[in-house]
Length: 181
Image (cartoon, rainbow, N blue to C red; front, side, top):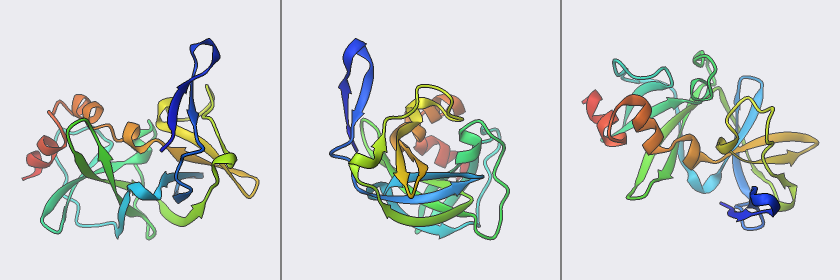
């Protein structure tokens, strides 16, 4: 997405001039979020989820996606809120995240997908240092669209395979998926 650069005083800033300009926007509660379109593989209807016992509340279960087992993360619960209530517009966005060794497909459960927006780098502000309802390292930036802010997620941080594995006690996404099998 962008480059991490050292600012004065040792602060870390994100240089957004190289950021992708297209983002998929979606709603979680009353907030509007976005992820870089290059991370999105597909959007599917919510359903056919297999729950996995003894997993944190933010892991809703796994789905079978053309023969592959894909874990589904409830973003609202991942951000420390309550679990998402399933509605008629609830869907799963399949995103690709990278860790050191490989790429993984992970589903994120959202209230509703909105649209794909072009957000120029000049309209993306750095994440707030405080006051956000989610961890600052989860936020890539704040996109200004029609006078409102859209929270652009750093999807590799939000869905960090290593962090999720630590929280679940598993060794990785493969083990989370294997627990369902």
